[in-house]
Amino acid sequence: AAGERRRVRHKYYHTIDNHSYAASALNGPYAYQFDIDNRDLNFMATFSAGNDGGAGISPDMSKNVMIVGATDFDGNYASFSSTGPIGTNDRIVPDISAIGEHILATAIGGGYSRTSGTSFSSPSVAGMYVLLQQLHRERFKGMQISADVGKLALIHTAVDKGVIGPDYNYG
Image (cartoon, rainbow, N blue to C red):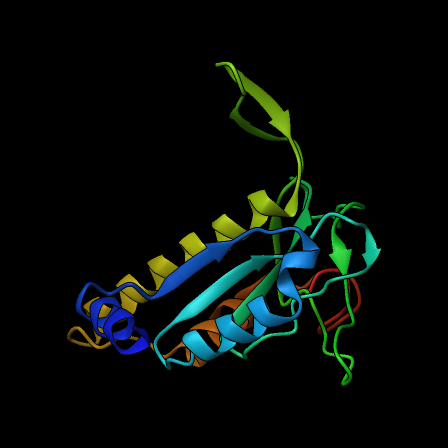
């Protein structure tokens, strides 16, 4: 039940989820249901932008979602990272970008290998959001930061790359 999920989230400070799906999963009934289930001022979700390169981001969901694009280690736009705009209002996405190219990860069968994708960028932003939440609770006597203010803080303190201001490659 949605009410029970909300109660448990608040009790245990579950304030963010990270998601990485194929683009087709983010359209239609799943996107709508996610939006309905997560209308909570204290909850944020990060979504990987996708790896189609160029325009093609599909998650057109609630405002408490950060769509995350990918960069290389030098902060340059990763050519595989999907870009905006999305929706009927040409929403600027990604919202923010993080390193997602040549990431050292565990390999199938053991060991490690280098891999790339926005699925590696999105968890970094989710982790930054958790650290921001923790700092806010420490400084403001246990009070949680609202999702819109947390999103705003991350986006507006990120290093601006590409054209000045928000853009369809970096956010």
